[in-house]
Amino acid sequence: MRITSGNPVMRKESFAHKNRPVMISIAKSLSPTFEIPFPAVTICSEEKAVKSEIDFAKVLRNSENLTEEESSKLKALLQVCDFRDRENLQDALEVNQMEVDIVSTLEELANPMDDLFERCRYGSFRFSDCKKLFSKVITDEGICYTFNMLDRKDLFKDVYPHRVHGTGYESGLYIELKKKKSNMNPGCKRGVRGFRLTLHTPIELPLMSKDFLYIPFQKLTSIAVNPHMIYSSKDVKDYDPSSRQCYFSNERNLTFFKTYTKSGCALECLSKHVLSSCGCVKFSMPRDNLTQICDYSMLECAYEAERNLTTRDLERKLLQKQLKRALKHGEITKKDEGFKRLKKMESCNCLTTCTSLKYEPEISQTDFIISDDPEHEVTVINIYFKHAHYTRLKRYEVYALSDFLSSTGGIFGLFLGCSVLSFIEIFYHIITYCIRKVKRKTNEVNITPNIGDITRF
Image (cartoon, rainbow, N blue to C red; front, side, top):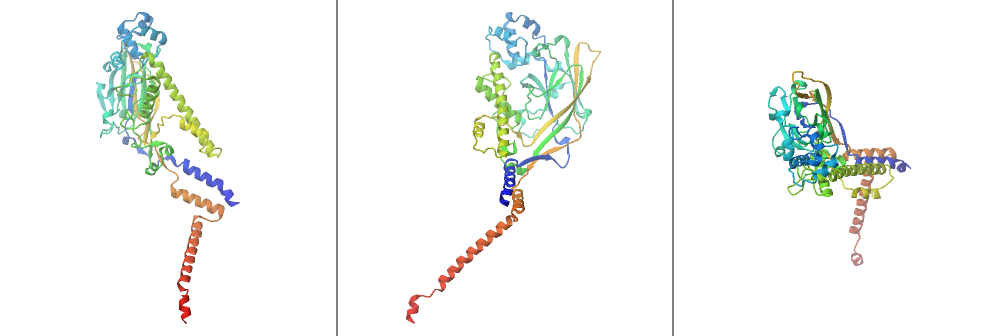
C-alpha cells in the first residue's frame, strides 16, 4: 500500500531529474554596465537609391522602354525593394539578359556615407567624419552602416568592442543623419522614408528585415538600453545541450562563422535550405565561391523557401511541446509514433549560447525641425545605457546526483518508514550473514577427522 502511494511521487521526481535538470534564476548581485560591450548599432536607409542615380517614379512609368543601364540597376534593386508593380517589372526585365553584380550596383546607388551622416559623438568624443565610428556592412536590406561590430577576422583575437563608463545621454552614442529633399527616392519601399536601426552584440550579423526599430525624419529619437545577460555555471556543461537548451562556445562549429551565435546558425540554416530548394542563395546569405546568387527571377523561390522553413520550425516546436506534455502525464512512451515523426522532421537546432547578451530598447521620440536648413530632412538618434548596473540571470543545475538521492531517500522514508540508509543496513546484514555462513562451513571441513587415522586406534 505504501509503495503504491509513493510510486507517483517517485515517478514525478524522476521525470523532473531527467527533463528539467537546469533552471534560470536572478543572480544574487547587480553587475556594472562597463563590464559589457556597448551594443553594436546598425542603420539602413529605407531609400536604397538616390534620385540622381535612378528616378523610381520615372522608370516605373516607362518600364516597357528601359535602357540597359536602368535594367541592370532595377535587377539589383529588386533584391531589396518592394515595388508596387513588381510582377510587370520582372516581365520587362527579362528582355535584358545581362548579368549584374548585385553588391557593387547597390553600393553605387546607395546614399554615400558622407552625404548621410552629418555628425557623430561617442561619449565625450565628437566626430565631424563619422567614418571613424561607422563602417559599411552588407545585410538583407542592402548597404547599411554599423558601429561597434567586430570584423570577422577579429573574432578570435584580443580585440575588444567599445565600452562606456557612464549612463545617460552624455555617455552614449549621438548620431545626426540628413538627406537632401530633392534627392529623395521613396519608391523602393512603397513611399516609406526614414531608417531602420537595430541593436545587437558586436559578434553578431544583424538581421535587418526581421528585428529593427523604425526611425522617421524630423524626430529626435532617444533609445535607453537595458542589457539582459544569461550566464551558466560550470556544472551545467555536464548535461546534453538539448537538456540545458544552450551551446557552449566550443560545442558547435558553423561553416561560415568563426564563433557560434544563434543568429549566425539561423542564417546558415536558412542559406542551406534556400540552396537546396532553389539551387541558389540571396546575395546577403553566407555562401562559398561556387554557390550561385539568386537573380530577380529566382527571388520568389527564395522567399517561398524561407516561409516553408519558418512554418516547418513552428510545426516541429508545437509537436515537440505536445509530446513532452503527454510524456509527462504518462499518456505516451518514448516509443510513440509521434517521436518517430519528430525525429524525421529536419531542424536548424539553433539554440542560444550558454552565455548570451541582449539589449532591450526603450524608445521615446519628439519633434526635431531645423528651420534654417529647408533643403534637408534631418533626424537625430541618442543611444545610451539607462542604468549604471544591470541584473544578470544564471543558468544552473537544479538536480545534482546528491540532490536526487537525498530527495528519493526522503520519499522512501515518508512512504515506507525507512530511508536509503535502512536499505544499506539490510544489505550489510545480508552480506555479513553470508560471510559468516561460508566461514562456518570452512571450519567444519578443517576439523573433520581422517577415517584411516581412526582405524589405526
